[in-house]
Amino acid sequence: VILVHGPAQLTPPVGVTSIAVRSAQEMLEAVEKHIDAADIYISAAAIADYRPKKIFDQKIKKQDGDFAVEMDRTVDVLKTMGGKKQAHQQFVGFAVETDQPEKNARNKLKNKNLDLVVLNNPNESGAAFAGDTNVVTIIGKNDSAKIAQQYKLDVSRAIFDALIAQKKGEGSDE
Image (cartoon, rainbow, N blue to C red):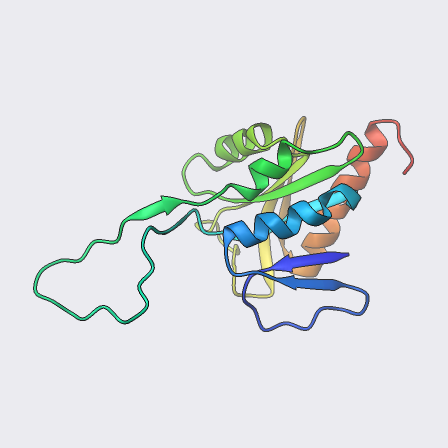
């Protein structure tokens, strides 16, 4: 298992290779380096969609009036990887959606060449990012499963159960 992650205070489990990155571009490069050896790719990182166009070396002093920051779009790591997906690989993405959540999650599934999307709707009762529990919907190409509020470890098991069921449905016993 290779864990590519942004800045975090974490101790990876024994046997997990940890790669820390600080930008979407670094995330892309790290994932690209290891993707060919992966059977399953789970992209749970909340990678920034934009970055400041100009980086300042020093603090910007307060002035009268407004201040605008121009932004550039960052690379879409999940979409880039979806374009490189091999037949034996399974890809899982996460979606945080509040407007037409299932429709937008299904679009992500298709547009990024994913096998599953784990939909989080922060407006839903019991859905949480900071807590130990969550409420999600696991969306596949032909079905979806609502996962009632439970511990995140149990949610992760449900995701793997969905991957296994999907693989078995393809007639493979890998």
